[in-house]
Length: 213
Image 1 (tube, helix red, strand yellow):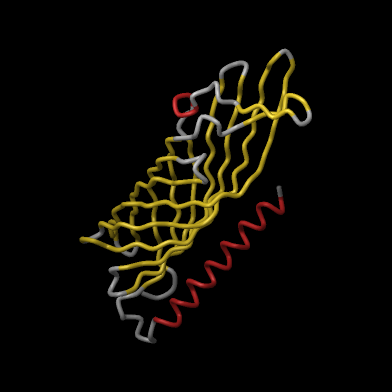
Image 2 (cartoon, rainbow, N blue to C red):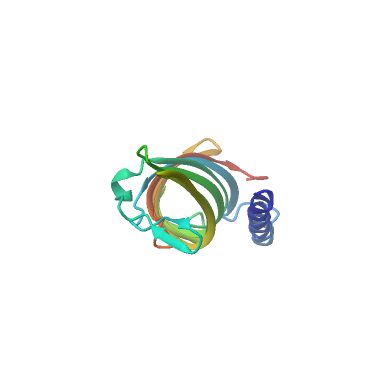
């Protein structure tokens, strides 16, 4: 688990370095070419749209049974998480590139004989275009490291824990409101997480400027 965490942090550090290098390369000494770099943190709420065969369990070695008798889209509770990003805005503040990392946790089922939860750690890069004032549309692409834990009581207690990394694509819409040098960012997205762990998410957070403006 420690190596799992440090791998995510390493990828995010590389992304931050890339965005910082781009900011330094594009920003003149005067710092007034319509570009800026900011760091943001957000709280997120996710409504899962998991596939019914998202999870499976080995009842005996080599006998893998899909847990498809539960409608996960109805059984799943709302998930919660946090994310951090570094954003570089350019083209007179009409476009931006971002690097993001976050964590989401979903309690998939808690039905007595069946308990399950999913933890997702998305790492992505993305872009956005500002349509009007602070209104923007964008998309993120990357990978999500998913850990699913399942416990079933079928005569005996049977447990299963799995990790996998899946491709992620998340179109999004949002609005940024300037409050002094701080930006309040409210957004919504639909995250396609490997086709199995999809969810609709809404987020609220703040972006703080990095360096001189």
